[in-house]
Image (cartoon, rainbow, N blue to C red; front, top):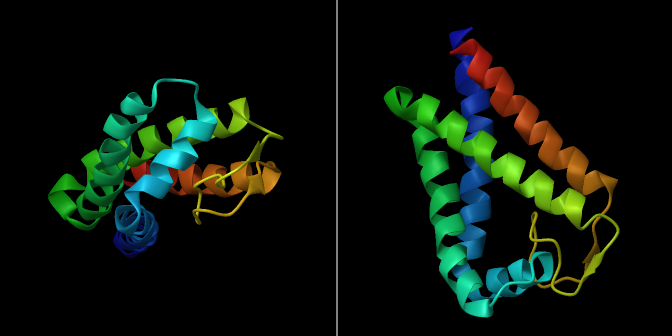
Amino acid sequence: MLVISWLLAAVAAVMYLKSGLQKLRNPYALQLVMSGYVSVPFRWIQTAAPIIITSEILTAVWLLVPFTRQVGVYAGIGLQLLFIILLTKNFGKTMEYGCGCFGLNQPQTIEGKHLYVNGMILTVLILLATLM
């Protein structure tokens, strides 16, 4: 069980780290992507974007450190639920700057595959939570 737990944590951590670092390289692109999801003042998005980036990178680190893994799992579950809610709310909508799932700056229509991938990540995290 310990090997499976480490493997699941490592897979989830790599995904969050990759995603967070990609967004960190171009935070303005993330802000544009986020503006397609919600209709709020852009200054709110400018505040939320660094929080999302930091949350993803911290979640990756927490997942890799055994004594913080539980925090990482629950942070990841929270992030995935947020992403799934936003994807569901905007299902079928063509996002001018992409969905922000695993690529930025590419127009993309939110489809079932986006929900599926995020649902699978959520499943991995829930499985990891049950193994702890």
